[in-house]
Image (cartoon, rainbow, N blue to C red; front, side, top):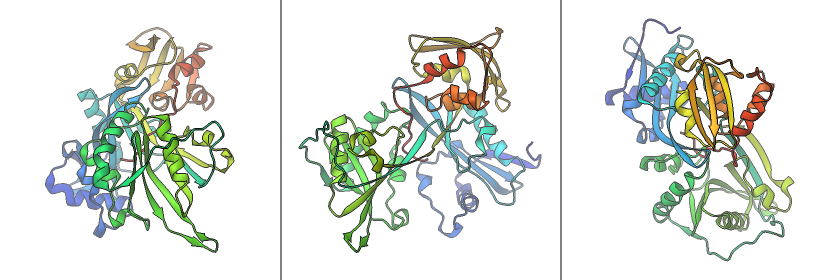
Length: 404
């Protein structure tokens, strides 16, 4: 329960310096050198501060985005960011007050989905966010690896250009591609400055970004210099690889694998990145899978019809949602021809689950059958969990390539 001495309000311009300092303290950064690049995307009318008297002790913001959902459809989403509690003020209900204010605001405005990246994995399920809605794969692989015999690399020229030359092309390509990739987000102009920030402090000892363009895609990467007893051992750290065609994908990976002096490539990419199956020795591709987006259904009846489903189904959910009680209760979920209808019902439940389990499964990243085995889903009518699992699955693993 929130401390009765606390208050919450939308921030104004005068709050920004202290808002930044609280963020720095909470994330254990140096307040004297606080990073202000996030201010470029912060929406002041969607940013909140929790106060104890006149002291700001908690922060949170929402970024207005679209997320691509199964079926290549676009859904409005509130991208939750900069959630912090000042050291010394934890366990007073500050985070609960921030979360409740955000979710009530999204509910009232009709924004049916909330998403976030969790700094700690034990916090957000209690607020109804489902883990592993998308996963992220840290992939490493040696250069010079050949593709298997069936792969055809074109003779298309790939050009390294300046940032200024690359930006207009990349913006257009990204906007077309993100509409086809489940979990990808829309970008406002300032997002590009944040995602591809290239100050010295952003580089972590690596070079500035290299921008390389294919007529149907692009790649952005940095270089970590290295030298060993056998000569150069540079590493390529890929930031974005965005392709409109499968041929561009093959060509750009071949380009990276053949760069002189480099010995290794690393890339935070999708769990189903097909490069593993392109190379002739997949065992040399290192993969380390982790959680990425956490997703919450702000309004179950508004969110579930926003995506396409893979098979027909007719089931009654009994949803538990103590944080957003308007979602609690029984809902009939009917899919026909890929489209869902969700309505209140008094019929007996076929399946019981909490709203976080629905959030995990929404993009197709987590199977409801797995959550049943984890005691997160209870089946009352045999066969319904398997049928729902198949309906929620998509043709690609959901992936969000950017932290916000």
